[in-house]
Image 1 (cartoon, one colour):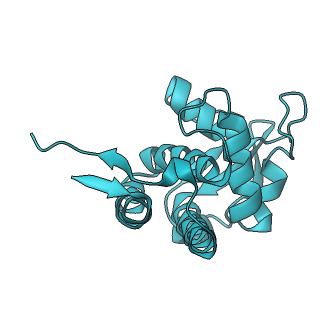
Image 2 (image 1 turned 60 degrees about the vertical axis):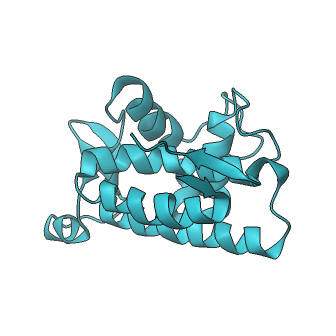
Length: 175
């Protein structure tokens, strides 16, 4: 089965990924963090396979496609390693999940109701054990991710699809 960018965004990124994310807050945070980097990849002009662009792509997607409430947790352009916010979602969440299979410096909860019941909210910075951590409410994170994909789709429809996103971008072989 092959996917062009439109089918890939609609089926895999906007439907399957959020469905998977909502089954488990821990895994959900990780797959959405990887998805954010992919959205940033769609926004830049570098080839999909180019290495060394993870931070820039992740932060670019947060800054361009996500609500302003995320921007304090993202590096500003030109995305240098030296200039990081206190709670950098790229380092804390995306790198933590990709490299050591656990978030570093963020707290996770699954549902908006759980956060409300605890008197907390999405992206609120909470102090635990003398350290501050932003709270990621995975249900809200997923909703904001889907809205970001919607915005990316609007942008892709408004202009010619970049060459790097033309043709099949994913093929899954039937076994």
